[in-house]
Image (cartoon, rainbow, N blue to C red):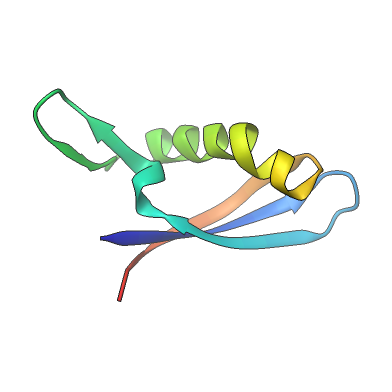
Length: 74
């Protein structure tokens, strides 16, 4: 399995926020199988969705996606 190291910018105070999240946040499903999205644009969309649905509330701010990379989980 994979983890996603994600870097975001707090648009309210300009600080950088780094998180490691589960790779399942980048999973796409075709009905029979699931896999990590291979298209960077789709990965960005899925991560922005995660930010909007979870991270903004968890950090009580408005976060903007800066960068991300996948890491094979230990």
